[in-house]
Amino acid sequence: MNITHFRNTQDIVLEESNPVAVPLSEPVAVASTTSVERSDGVETGVWECTPGRWRRQIVQQEFCHFIAGRCTFTPDGGEPIEIAAGDALMLPANTLGIWDIQETLRKTYVLIF
Image (tube, rainbow, N blue to C red; front, side, top):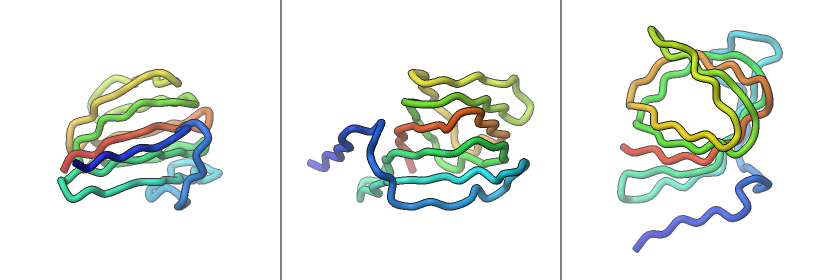
């Protein structure tokens, strides 16, 4: 059995921080992550991003639960989705769109390969 447990996800210290890959605003948003890649093809973790606007492709199918912050995600060819703490999303593989983060956003996530 392979159990992954993150304690106190609201306040956990995240291990890696990098500017987003395709920024569309200044200042450039910075994303931070703590994650575990399991041998069964699943990655799970805690992710946070500072305010900013940027483009991203969700390569793998992703389930995420937002625990802090506020943003808008606009998928290519779709309507904007307003997201706030307490919301959850299931994003299909290869989702393309624009993230506009108004308040530092934190989520837990599961990527399914």
